Image 1 (cartoon, rainbow over the protein chains, first blue to last red):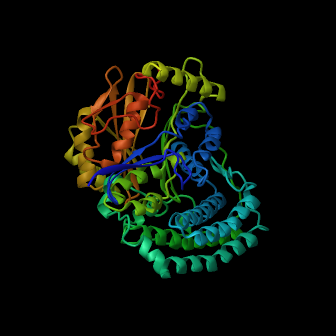
Image 2: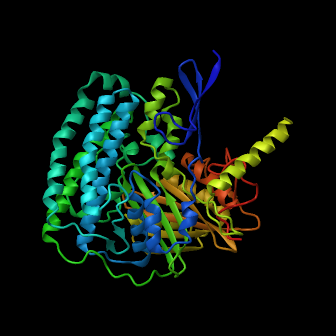
Length: 396
Length: 142
């Protein structure tokens, strides 16, 4: 049978993000998958070298638009490790609450998209409807629905007022029946079973070979979670569990994410209880960042975020390395998509909950002029030049 | 547990290791010569079954430093292998034949810092545009 290339991208019609998957297919079967990136490359690692440590937090918050606190969380962990800063206990609880509220809204967002991708638009509408109250709470306690700017080296920027605690409690409590409903929808619906079970399987060995992370790894029975493995913030201080499933298919990934939301609710409630009794400062005084290097990690909704920072003693990092979880998870599609059918490819590609703006961050700076990025005028000029060049080459 | 890992690495590669710096019980850095990297990466990944985290590369003006981060999840420890390569001829053995997950990051370091990874199965650009000029490396400091 003849082989065909099916392009998905450079602008994904469903995920509405810039990435390019080339599927080499024979009939319905996917034989090979090639992934092309670079459409969203903004140069954040390079820009970080020209910002002070405080400014870096605002910059890395903009690595991702969905899990926006994940990168500042890893960043404060890295700098605090580098400079050996002790964070007040109250701040630790606030950090974990923000981290877990974010996991709730991010997993609900994924669940909605997953429903949308398999044509189950009711799930999409429901999941996004119930994501709203989480964002409302964010607005209430941080001032923003996204990009909360709560992290600060040595602590957090804003306190959670005791007046707000009952409202947060009510919101997460209100989510529990919703989660029960979604659990029922996924676990009992024969259509979802037919669409997701046994589809896009990633084995334990594949997880190890590719270094896959987060729910993608945990759905294949690999119990890795930075919150437990390398405890930070308030995660070792409250009671919760790492969720794993053994099957490694898309269904298992959905189940892991739904069950994880229950754990997030547990963590938030545990932290809120502590906030009632633990008072005191919410940030430590930070004088200067000594020369040296630090590694910070945070378990983002998609897996471990890894930040490596090197300091020469000035107020700016000399090197800032960011590794987002999708960078490791997206290549696993070469295992999970290949061998399946085209119709399963869309949901399998989406099952790692890919985040393309996280995957591409690095830098374009003109060293001579010091100019960063490109303006609209530059892009028009570049485009015209390229058209002219192609015309010349083609002798039009 | 965490000490055992370092002890195992020390015992097997005592004569290759230039220096070990234990920043904290959870973070250790091992300095190595570039020619020994592949062998020790293979030992840590295949025998000790550490999780490959990522590779970082830093232009330190007179050399390019490459750091291979490995996570021992049960012990909660990160071990980083560090090596310096000549900036005039930045070349090092690829670890992608051992670790599939290293393919992208080696491609990224290749395009952003101009490090050539020998025996990499697919050493082409990852993020930069096709018409980005050859020989210009955004993360270099020269």
